[in-house]
Image 1 (cartoon, each protein chain N blue to C red):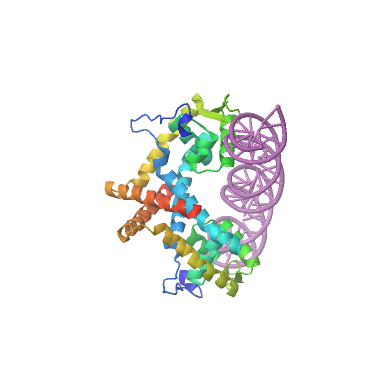
Image 2 (tube, rainbow over the protein chains, first blue to last red; image 1 turned 135 degrees about the horizontal axis):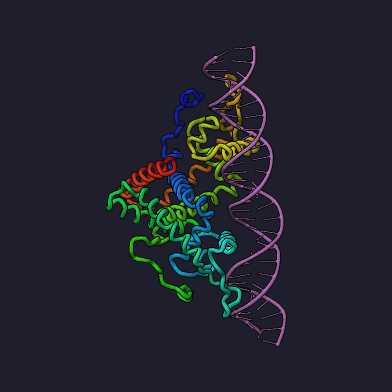
Length: 163
Length: 163
DNA sequence: GGAATTTAGTTTCATTTGAAACCAACTGCA
DNA sequence: TGCAGTTGGTTTCAAATGAAACTAAATTCC
């Protein structure tokens, strides 16, 4: 079925200017990341009625106790609109509350409510076990390699966009 | 400015149930992938008026000469709605054409026009040089590691979502 | 003090997205 | 033949997104 197309064979120049999508790093990262994120989201979306941005906000709060909207932007690489909306939804669903900073009334400190902490504590093991599955058949050396490579790539990527 | 928050320090249980966002693999992948994709998109979005899905369709056609919508879905991991719309836009902008298969008139073979090939040939070097920058300070061994790790993770991720 | 600037965060609006419904063509198979 | 699936692909509709405009508070500078 595959080889019925008029030009079944890759038409690569073979002079170093070929682009093979399935080997192209940005493409591979994108597919991998989307697959993983959706896999995890499936674990909590229905069960807790939480979206990916909301989960990320909870993750930051779970780790740092409380944070301003700007803090969350910085730590999640989400943009401020996304964060603002995630906080809104989490507020109306009673997961977090906003405490306006009396010293600077533009800022507000976001913290989880008891309910939010409850949900967070339920999701964390799910997320971690998902990550564990993903890493299942990497040996310790490979895991270290992965860690190092992601760090390097991350640094390069930031350079790319900033320059 | 960072450490002015009420709970500046991570509040980890330290009993193995902690989730450290900045070390959490799905999160790292997501941030990295978004950063990279946006960086690349910036290269061609303005210049050629092309979106990420459109670029991916062109990349498949550039590699395989022609393909059906379903082929493209399979090769890009995009869903069929996305592909359908990308092809629509590419058709109206004169980059590709659709040739209905006379043997099965539901199917259509998509191929680049001369114009499409022209744009493709302009984008490819940009994309490749972007990838090269990203890989710049990885040595050959590290590049192989990266390749192997991405393959393994990809396989695991697919397992995750399918089960 | 007060006009001009900056900062924190929200709202608006037009576009993008994706799930589900849909359509039209093909394939059993009775 | 004819009707119950399938399959390839498109459309619909409601929700998510993001750039840009906006509000309100704080800061800077004269």
